[in-house]
Image (cartoon, rainbow, N blue to C red; front, side, top):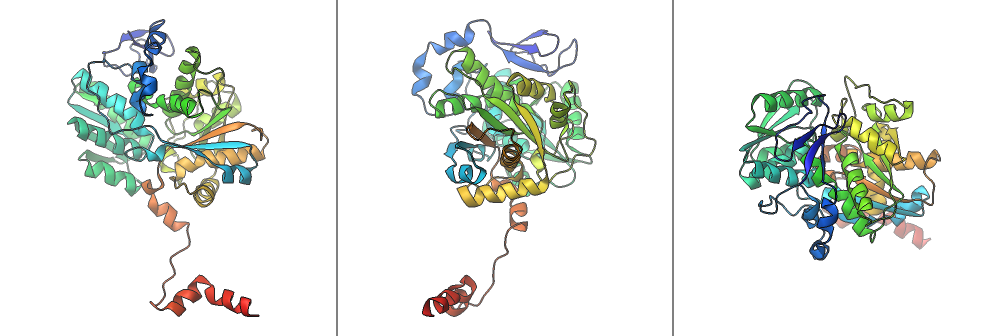
Amino acid sequence: MAYQKCIKCGSEYGIDEIVYFCKKCEDILEIKFEQGELAEALKDRKWRNTPLSVWRYRPFMPVSVTTKIVTLNEGGTGFHSCKNLAKHVGLRELYVKNEGENPTGSFKDRGMTVGVTKAVELGVKSVICASTGNTSASLAAYAAKAGLQCAVLIPSGKIAYGKLSQAMIYGAKVIQVRGNFDESLDAVLKLSEKHRSIYLLNSINPFRIEGQKSLGYEICDQLNQEAPDRIIVPVGNAGNISAIWKGFSEFNELDLIKTLPKMTGIQASGSAPIAHAIKNGSETIVPVAAPETVATAIRIGAPVSWKKALNAIRDSGGTAETVTDDEILNAQKLLARVEGLFVEPASASSIAGLIKLVENGVIDRDERIVCVTTGHGLKDPDTAVKMSEKPVEVDAEISAIEEALGLKKQVAIMAR
């Protein structure tokens, strides 16, 4: 039987106990499996014959076999061999795992399908989260599917309308808090503790991480039961990088893969407490009071899962790096124009980080690398429009269109 365990003091809690922090030391929790439990699940080979998805790995999820799954067919996202980008950067082998292909357009769906399924199993009627956008969109969708009441708290200031519109249309109660994400998260933590009927589904909830670890599982399967040399991941609230590491570690323990990747986290320079801690060799982070970046999905100054992220990076022999907004936007445009992949700015931070680490000699050009892009470009279309060439307006005449396309010049040159 799986259980919840404090990552600091080791205190254990039942798998069906609603608890977000350790009652003894107040640190965060993770899901652990009893000795041999995952190995026992592995004996049933039926999962190998099911389509690639989060629930392909149901035997490795802490959800009862009798529970009805709340799913929108998440997972099974594209694993793109990016030869054009690899050539541009100077790498031998590069892949992009594009999580924007999930149902609501981000990696959050992996965690939410498991988290909301667990909420139904626990019998709760209301769910809540704080969000910079993607979490709210995902929770609202899965809550609608499950017939649960849903509330989301978003910070004041810039919220990408592609994400906000999703939460609204799915029927969530959207509350905008005068403050940043960290203050919104503090509020939902207090609400969920005070009102036990409201189930919290930010990444502090360890069942979210269990869904997100399937990203690591999928990469292994898409590489024919091998691990890449390095995984590069955008880091905001820091749940995803630790979740992916958990997936790889579990497959390694089960002898499904022989090696483990170096986990590499990328943060925006205006919101980079984890990257600074790695660079400084610190055991703790220094929160950023007023985080700022165009990559709104990772604009988080006090990531709740920072300790898990530091452990994942260090245990894997990885590293962390910061990138500027200009580097992020240039990488977003580059990925779109050489590989046809349109991702939101936060997603492009993994590409920006890749370029910087290669240029600085941190990444060997012979490494097999997977960059995770976490959300679709349509999550934040305004940013893409602002940095692209504006449409050219002409009369509806062939000659005018030819001139706008430069075709008349081409004809003139050929006639010489």
